[in-house]
Length: 342
Image 1 (cartoon, rainbow, N blue to C red):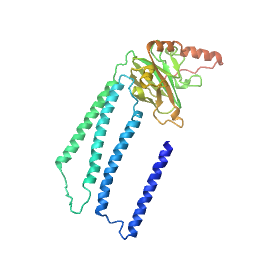
Image 2 (image 1 turned 45 degrees about the vertical axis):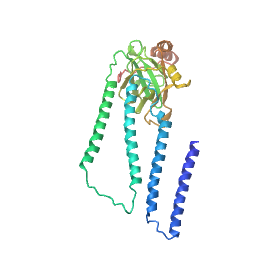
Image 3 (image 1 turned 90 degrees about the horizontal axis):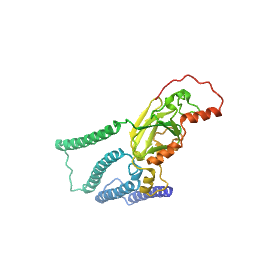
Image 4 (image 1 turned 30 degrees about the horizontal axis):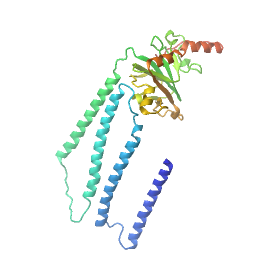
């Protein structure tokens, strides 16, 4: 359907161009120079300005209604997400208001003041009052938006993370892995030299704090539990993006980044709200990180407390998984540990 629409649009443009060319040739054959602009031409062009204005506004209104949901999915599923949406909506209101007013005036003036022989244009070299108005008002509006945005961002990034559940999100071409801090709520050390097929995150098995860590391929979050996501990358810069939670943070090789938030809607409740039994939250990569960038996603599930505890109780700790792998494989000489991240 999209391809058919594109073909129709291209054909309409080609046909329109041919019609215009035929009209030009007919004018030449009738003895009227194509370059001569008549009163009728000006009136026609002015009317076309109004047509373009109306059709353009209808198109913009339709596409905004049709595809607006692809920007930030609603409703926000985190506590701070409400503030993000409020800030975004304020920006949209200001941008759309200015756009519609200025665009309407631009096209309307082109129609209203189209050339006529009896009309003479006035030349104004400067108008200090107008220049002050269109400089001061936008400056005040922009300062207000920037100030409000900085306030929201500061409040989000300076939140107290004491006691928050710590989860590491590890990015590598082209997958995500989650590592949960165990009962001690402290992630064990990781060492890039220990990265191999059986230990893709390079977790240091000699660190006691790493023994109760849990590695999973899905990201489970507990409803209303303060959560601190620690981001790490194995290869290139990835960008962890959880659109429903209004969370995005770069994952940079060689350093740790983090984002704190609190999920407020379970997956089950969101399915009910959207009337979609197949809905799932998702963690995406928002950086073009390679040829399979589009496949780099992770399923995210928000559970209530009982469901989360039941899921966690079924997961094996790093020590249990590592012990099982050692039994299955021959002994390997272990290199000295170099701690590079925590």
